[in-house]
Image (tube, rainbow, N blue to C red; front, top):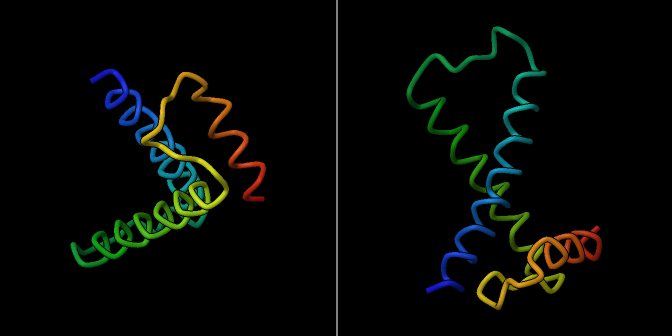
Length: 85
């Protein structure tokens, strides 16, 4: 159960970084770029999810395994991020 909680924590941390990065990028576009319709908001969420999935796959291909023991959690993600770049 403890490993499961850590795995959820890791995935949540990675997702929050991606979402924060996406939110910052969107705020720099222009103040009038707020989506007017539900379809536009849905398209933005879908795009953000696709970016998140791409980043997670890069980390996994660089050796990060979210399902493994996460006793060295920050180091695991940072090492995978360095390898991915």
